[in-house]
Length: 183
Ligand SMILES: [Cu+2]
Image (cartoon, rainbow, N blue to C red; front, top):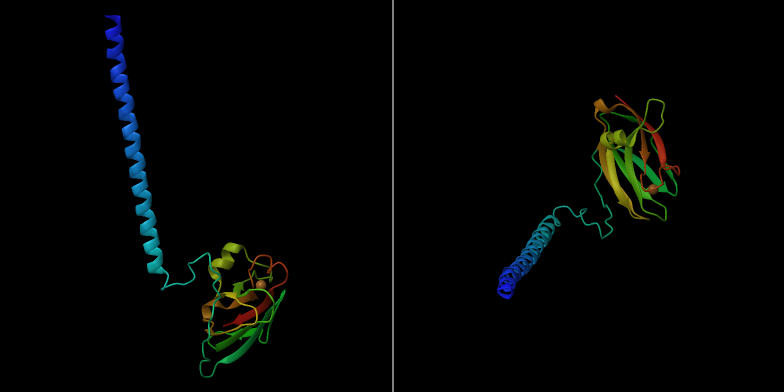
């Protein structure tokens, strides 16, 4: 009798273990299918979105290449970027006047062309305000290349700004050039 009882107790335990094992296996299979499905869907989304905006890829270096032709009657502004300076041929801008920015990277490194607001005393704004109220942004200008872009300041943005590069450490190293926009 005690032997039979032992068996009777052992048997359901074994069944239980097998059940747990089967369940665990099922879960692994499900998770596997789940991951392969999500990987598949994200990769599909990626291939769909790639042609429309080619800045999304994080693994390849993307250089901006903006080559607009000058609007008739626009005022040419020559901007030179280098390590670690910015110089602009125009410092006082007027709202409503069409400007044609010709931005040359004459340095050895990648630079940016940004027009950022500054505080009334000319000191830098907080990164939040810089990001929110920037007027132009050309990121990743390859060394030795020139970007060409038209821009007209609307009267609502009159104030003090700076042409700047926000590549890591460049702004702090001196890549900021003060400009004024009058209404
Ligand atoms: Cu820079």
